[in-house]
Image 1 (spheres, rainbow, N blue to C red):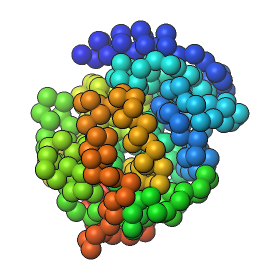
Image 2 (image 1 turned 120 degrees about the vertical axis):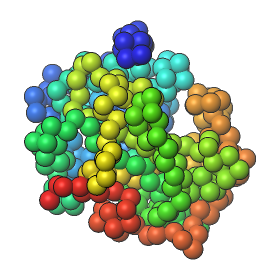
Image 3 (image 1 turned 90 degrees about the vertical axis):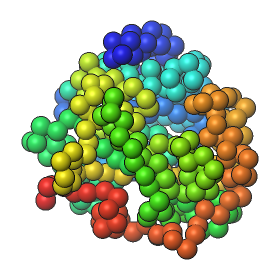
Length: 325
C-alpha cells in the first residue's frame, strides 16, 4: 500500500507547475509547513503570521487553481515555495498525492507540519516555547510523530452574522468549542484511533454519527522519504507513525488543531465545493451542511466552552503535555 501511494504521488507530481521555487533556501534544520489550498486569500495573512511566529521556517504550498488572488499573494511571500495545479482534487486523493510528493522530495529529515489554511496548531507550552522546542524534545525522546485532535471552533450566534476581515485572528470570532461529545474507535489495521464528535456531529450528522467527519490527525512528523500519508493526515504509513497515543495507560503528549471553518466565509465555500464535487464520498459532508442551512446555524449551546488557551484544553482532557515538563 505504501509503495502504491508513493508511485501515485510521483505520477501526480506531473500536474504540479512551480510558480515560486525557493526550496534551495531551506536550511538543514528548518521546520517546514505543507499545505494544499484553493481560494483562501482572505485567510492567508493571518495563517502565515501565526505559523511564522510559531517557528515555521518555510511553507511549501500547492494552489489548486485558485481564482481569488491566493496564488499572486503567495508568490510574493519570501518564505513560500508555491506550485499551481489544475488537476482534480478528488483524483489526487484530496490533495495528498501532491503533498506526499513534496514531502518526499523536500521534507526528508525535517520536521514537517501538514495543515489546512483553516487549522491553527496548538501544543503544550505553545504560549512560551516555539515549535522547535517541541521538535527538539520529540527528537530527544526518539518520537517521530505527534498527534493532534481537530477541535471545531464556532461563534456564538448564526455563523453568517460575524464578518471576518483579512488578517484578523479567526479565534476572535470562532471562540467557542464543545468540551465533550467525542467518541473514539480503534482502527486495528492501521493502528490509529478514529475520533468523531463535536458540533458537526450534533448539528449536521446527528442522524448518522458514523458519517461525521474524522477528528484524529497526525500533522507533525519527522519526515523520511519512505513515509506517506494514507488518508489525508488521519493516518500514515508505516503504521507505527499512527501510535500517537499511549497503549498501556498513561498519556502521551498531544496537541490540537483549532478548526476555524465556521466563519461567515462558510456559505460561499459550501456553495463552491458542492458545485465542484471534489470532496470525499460525493461531497456528503458539504451536502449535509447545505441541507441544514449551515451558514445560518447557531452552533452555540449551553454546554459550549469559550477558548482561553492550551492549558484549558489539557484540564478538559482534550490534549496532554505527557511527560514534557
